[in-house]
Image 1 (cartoon, rainbow, N blue to C red):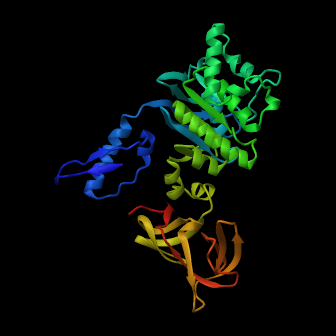
Image 2 (cartoon, rainbow, N blue to C red; image 1 turned 120 degrees about the vertical axis):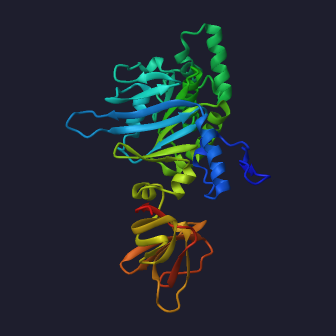
Image 3 (spheres, helix red, strand yellow; image 1 turned 180 degrees about the vertical axis):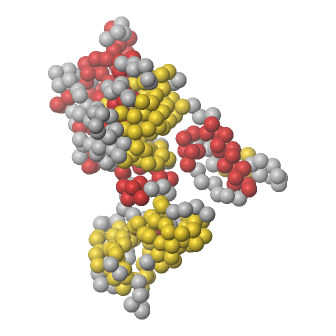
Length: 394
């Protein structure tokens, strides 16, 4: 993104170079008058984005005496966007996906797809007419059918010639045309995953749902397959909702993500924004390692048990801060102040230290060249503003 303001008092002109509309939702352009004008323009851009899927205050419980599995869940998915629902087991993400697909009926709330009501107080469209494709965790391929037979399965209403042409088009798209006559047991895990995706795409759905699609693959294959699938989805412009418990997967795969806990969404945003600016202690701790530190804030700074830190915004009073291990550095302590290194973990490309200050341990992540060893006394310093996850605004 670039801005141009050639004369004072004029509203900045924005040139958006290859930026997806959903990326604009998370841009942080600062607080000066000129930057505020840029923000207003960005907000105008986001207002004209086309919402494909709209989930509004969806609630679902499986028994009256039990708490809801999904409670007041709301989010939008935009055309061409990959949106991830991320959270631990039992947080409600898979139930939300099943509600979108039509496999479950909501107790309250509404779901719209391209403006059509799929789910509401008196409306429940069956899965087969929703225009939604789904790839299950187990892929659900027919073992007795070939690749071609599995993909053609959902196209029985088309004439034979049109059906064959569509299947071959999709197999070419996912790079499986040369394997069209193989059975599922003759394919690798990644190839099976692409067959399942091809079967979903073949019916030309408006939206693709991915239910933990990479969890059955080993680590090396998972990474490669994830890259292939993301490239394919972006190339075809498919709007997608991914369900996963894997933080790295959500951060690298999605354009935006929603972090869920206890049936509710805690935060929605671009991966970089949610990671670097968590809004709750749960999001900070779940989305990667962090140090949660209590402190007393006055304006832009807070006094904490490990020193005085600059804050990401001005507050007053007691605060709970999130400080990522990679945002801390260490220096030699010559006077016995600071903390003592009690653990050093070498991980190849980086090092993780555990530093004890008083009765509390703090994590510090450095590159592999850091010379400090267990037993050394060090001072900690933050290289980024600490993020407030609990506190009162000024």
